[in-house]
Image 1 (cartoon, helix red, strand yellow):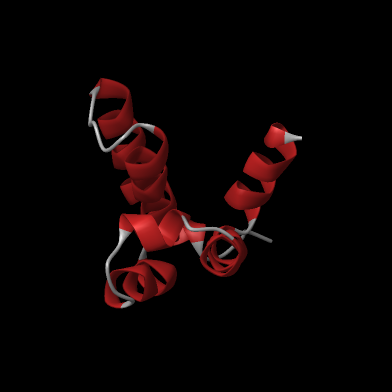
Image 2 (cartoon, rainbow, N blue to C red; image 1 turned 90 degrees about the vertical axis):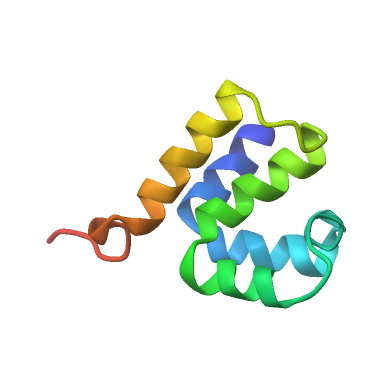
Length: 87
């Protein structure tokens, strides 16, 4: 079951962010206001998801694994192929 949830989060990050916002407290504990979650929802969904995982699951401690995955998330968010699929 956790693998299915992770697969859905990777396939539909904005849908998963909406789920986290409405049904859990993960984004509420990670951010004080609505500006950063809204900006992450629009511009960088993978980075927003990973940042909230680090704050909630890892207690906000940034180790080597957390930094490497954040770099991958930022690259995924910035890549031009992330928004469109090849025919």
